[in-house]
Length: 153
Image (cartoon, rainbow, N blue to C red; front, side, top):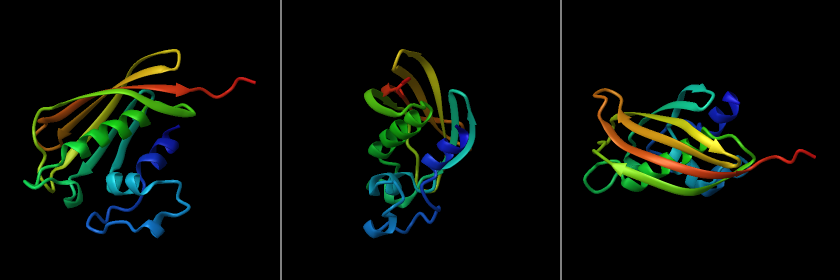
């Protein structure tokens, strides 16, 4: 399971300034969107129901003021929150994100995701994005997913 999570989140190398070309990821199983948004993320720890990652804010994901864009934060909540839940296919049902602070270009972030619980195929996670140096919370997201389980036949 740990290896599957690492493979899912670590989509490519961390050359953050080079934008991937469409032909550059054919056959990788990853979309342009996943490669563009997750490139540079590093998985630090994987335990059952828990993932810890680090991510340096790249230029490609910043807004006009040089802060990590809110859409990029939402994507991190979606991807890292979904990675902690292992099933055949997950569909996001709901995400709620509190944007509490800003992350500047070049800052190192710690992203943690915990499984809060599950009822049948419905699962809930919490994702916290914080500045790795200061510990300041940048955003906190709750992510609920519905997953189709593998057939028992």
